[in-house]
Image 1 (cartoon, one colour):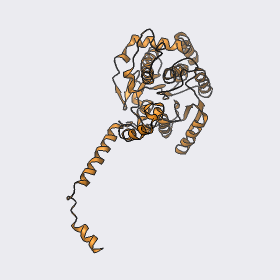
Image 2: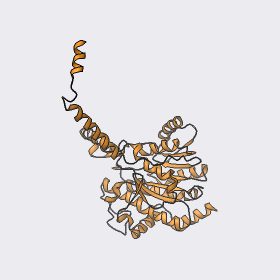
Image 3: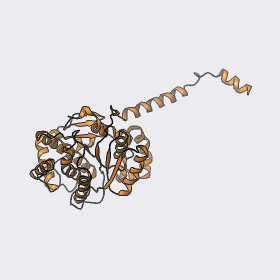
Image 4: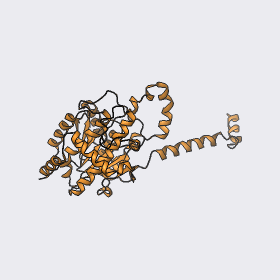
Length: 351
């Protein structure tokens, strides 16, 4: 014991550089993770009495969005999930974390327009007013060919079904005393999208798209159509706002499970440390969405794109008004709606 005490007394902490090297590495890693995590939501506003519909609620970013909105005292969360089992598991979690709110689970399969319409009828039967719609669900590298409606899966799941959902819920959003809010989750990847034929803005005649190209195109379509709808609602005097955001690069969402690279065990082991270091957690990816739903300062913000909780500039292609108009009209036709019928439906519901 005496020898140990003597060794500790005589020890020189500066005799070795290893403690400083280790401390420096820890500092760099912590700094990188903090920076890559992005800006947290700048407000802590509660949102009592709000009814909020969330697609993709059962996992990843959508799950964390629901948890945060429940903590912020939303009156009712409508969880749109592909199965009741997924939704029920999340509902039990939310009840433990925020026992004073209401949660409903309705099945929504974005691969089917019929499923979207059934979901909307259920929402309308329970809620004449909807205060926010968060279109968060999405797929990438999705296998399995076309949907039952005949569209490429990324196009329908990421864009067309959400487009239809938003159009059908316009009356309920228009009744919100707080001003309805639509938050469409896009991605940084929209800047890589290509529309080869302006007469075919939905790329329905492009039969050889890769999964990555189809994903990027679907995310660009979200931005283009959101801008058009935002302007139309503003022109018609509605208080509903429509904005887009990118959650950033987020790990742990399951989106990459169909990626050709991630199918190899070696690739998973090799990329995991870098994903942990450079990608956001699902909770960090939810911050921008939460701000767009809860922040009173954004009540009049309309037709914009957000990243890391701040408004950012869109790409030149995303600001192409003529292309956006073409895509919006093509989208109405694809989902079996028309601008006239949409206006009449909205007007009738408001009256």
